[in-house]
View 1 (cartoon, rainbow, N blue to C red):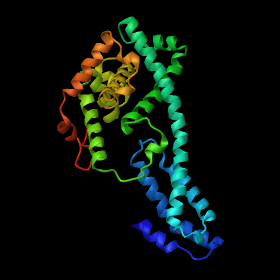
View 2: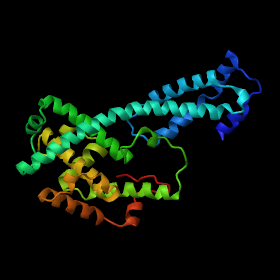
View 3: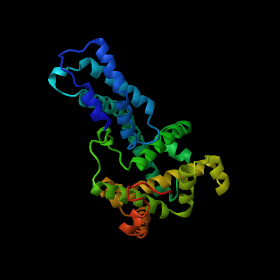
Length: 293
């Protein structure tokens, strides 16, 4: 409603705008930037900077005022909205290119970890993993931090899509809402089906936001071991969600036979056994707002 009122109030009859009129357009439509940014942030992970999006939106609003021609009969609000959305997309594309690089590194680390696990019959140590990847143990820690952020992005957004996927262009319909609620329910069930120690690490680290050394002390293991457990849990969660929601995302190695594959299949079955659609929907309100994990 605010945008509609602003659009009506800024329709002009002249073919050009003066500097004073452009300044007035910008000042009048400053709330439009905030509205579009807030709308977008509802679909984005918490680490995306609101300030960066606002800055990009403000610059786009100023450029829109300079390029606005009232004689075309297009309300300034609509004209500016298109420009601002485009600028926000450009800002997100920059983040998306970075996340693609991280996802590539994540896949390499994950594949190497699985290969070593199959060969050794146990989870490899950080030193063994670093040696197999051809990097220093210190660099592996940096890779691990980037990987965890990328995985959390996937868990929070339930997709690793492009920037365009994150911009809401329409109001979700009933079917979209049901699918969204079902995804959240599957995440609950995937966490609930994790082995006890992995579930404890995920809950403590991501939802209780406890430091790594605190978790290690409680479990009686080293911080390095907690990091390994966290990585193992997140891989299981991702594959568990993909198995039920996006089976085509599981690669050939994850579908192959062997004891590791059998354990994964058992985990997938446990997720399904956590409940039906009604049980999954019960983890959110009718409006799709999740209850606490």
